[in-house]
Amino acid sequence: MANLKYSRQRASIKEYLANTTSHPTADTVYLHVREEFPRISLGTVYRNLNLLADMGEAIKISTPNGGDRFDGRTEPHYHVVCTSCGNVFDLELDEQHIQGINALANEHFQGTIDSHTTLFYGTCKKCLEKK
Image (cartoon, rainbow, N blue to C red; front, side):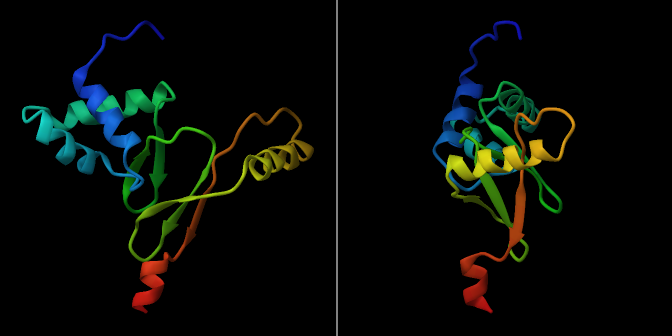
């Protein structure tokens, strides 16, 4: 990818993602970044989020009901989607487990597995407490 011109707006989006664990939608990122850049458009936020994901500086999480979510934590890890409230949470597993799944997949694939994504579904603690 060609050298990209520095953008204060993109830097602000990246900083917001790096400092939240909520896995926000583009709309949520837009509402936050708009506080610093009142004239920013939702389209600019979408473009920059997708660009950050393409560059490997953010992770795009496609959820079935809530649209795409974004994560500033880029090292390999899993996510859980709460089927009750729709929030997305990090699932903390060590690197050994993640690499073990790649190795298992390699045993059953005529080719090479380099990486994978996994999205788990369940009910979060807060939703369980409400029931």
